[in-house]
Image (tube, rainbow, N blue to C red; front, side):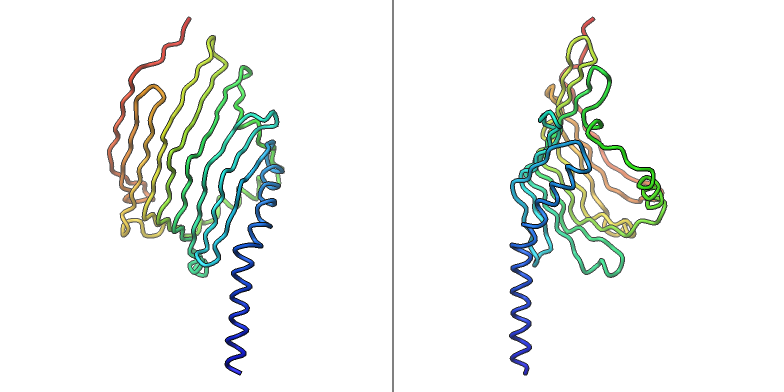
Length: 234
């Protein structure tokens, strides 16, 4: 009898692994693309999506988001999310890792003073807005972030409202947040860093420690250097 139980448990475990490693990615990938395209006026593509049922991690590779004219809006090389499901039983969400590698954003300020990223958003129904307002007013769950990071990001900005087209970029954008806990932030001494290389050759680097959320209390340093200033031609 005991051997039969062990055998059945083994079969269930193998089925769980097969479902997690092979079946779920095949089901989730097309549904995720469909949701993105239904909620926005965009064309979306994903090269691959994988799920590790042992580590409870999801990895999405090479996501590309274009507008309906096939102009680039947003993309990234890799998004990796790893959570600890055991704390969900206690009403808390623990992110062991959230990594976004090489995100690229294209921001365009058109001649009609519209922004390309805002134009792709579909209007929301009033009921959805009411539900969102109710959710925002309710208390948020405990969130524990062991590691959140962005690496090698880039933002390209183009402004067509000026007499001469103005372009600017932020490159090598990085962000990191470690040991962040909304309920006990002092104990872990959360650390935050945001840095970027400016398109004109300068840089910005902000480092801080988050001491408290309510009230907000941080301490840190800011380094900034710009190689040149922009002057609009008259």
